[in-house]
Amino acid sequence: MRAQSLLNFEEEKEKFSQRRIISHILLFREEFLYHPSSSLSARAMSLNIYIEDPRQCYAENDIIRGRVIFDCPRDFHEIKDVRLTFSGCSKARIQKVKGPAAPTGSYQSKCILFERERILVPAEEYKVPPTTYEWPFEFRFPPHMESQNTWPEARPFRSDENQPLPPSFDAECHNSQRRISASIEYRLKVQVFKPQRGLFERRSPAFEKVLHLPFVPMAARAHAHAIELEKKQKIDRTFTVRSLCLLPENTDRFLSVQERFKSWLSPAQLPYFSFGVDFWYPSYLVHGMPIRLLLDVNPFIDNTNAPRIPEIVLQTISITLVGRIAARASPPLMGSMSGEVDEETTLLSKTSLRMAVSGQMDLSERFGQLSLPATDITFSTFNLSRSCRLNISLVFECAGKLLKFVATDLEVGVLSNVEMTAEKEILARGSADEGSSHAREYVAYSPDEQPPSYSPSSIVSEWKQSPAFRVW
Image 1 (tube, helix red, strand yellow):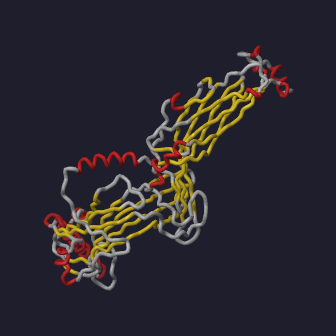
Image 2 (cartoon, helix red, strand yellow; image 1 turned 60 degrees about the vertical axis):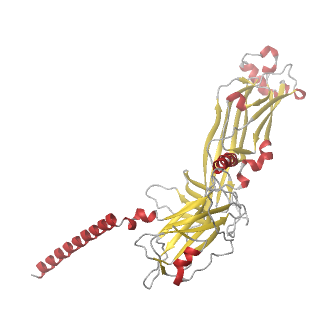
Image 3 (tube, one colour; image 1 turned 90 degrees about the vertical axis):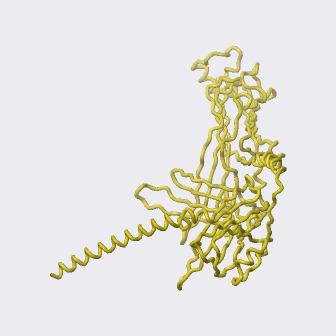
């Protein structure tokens, strides 16, 4: 009898739970259909950030002007405060690459590059009518990073304070040992908070909007390195060939085994010939611009006893660009981890050329234009680094001998050509603005000032009268 009663109780409990779930579904459906302002999509569109005269990319000391628009929904009756934050942040996440069944530890780091906050509406509780509100704002990108360094010195990272702001960055890469997620972002974030009831107050906003701002510092723009772009770095090698093939009677024939053995026993008695190879490469590469690489091959007449100058033949050529992302991070409790991931891109690869070379040769003229592929700007900061290196491999043939010219880890900087594109946009925008006479009035605050305070008792009327606020 007792078991039957328990069974009936469990059945009634299950039926009650099902009825309760159905009632919640119907209630949500009615709310969504007849009160669209309370839906998630409507709430997401209720708060927006508009930038006046937006740019393709920003730089240090650039001013950002705009306004925050808040379409107050009908079911939203009270505001506690409204905050606008302008910040820059560098984040890294590193994982060890292990087997599928092995546990993976995650190491993370976060560096606040700078942070500004504006209180658009003071932290008071008041009722607001369901209409559209507007707050103008103005910020300026700082000239350098403002966070204090807590990292030790280690290459390739920077540990000096007041270093330049790094460019916007976002990458995910991995190799056989590490998996890296890295980002540098600059953003505006506005949050609308509503009053919370109860003992424990939550700081989660009722509305939030984030706007990302692309940033390229002046030091990473091509026009700031006009002089350096004309300069080139040189790698030189000297090759000396000792062989019986340098004699006229042995031209275009293979040496016998006896002749080779004799050459091996007495190399000092063989005729010799020397030549030099110079390879010129730029210190900086620019997005979308051709890469000019020069090869200079010259015989050393004063360092030869061969009766004639032999032919120097280029057999193979390989030029690759290696981009490296380095990151370092710390786990929540103890220890630290760093990782590097390389990505290799082939710029030029030719085999079986049999090309006679002498004097200076522009590789772009001989093999076609070499352009920089889409890649990130090079930079270095506390916890992230992006670098690029050239690897050169040439194989020459002279007097039947193969001679290798190898140069690796030739560091180059990668710059942005954003200024060239920006100038075109400014000209187009200027011609379009000539016929417009409409202007908006904005109130700008300096970094150390706050917007004027408002009285909670007359907040709505003062908003309408203040030039720093508009109601549509």
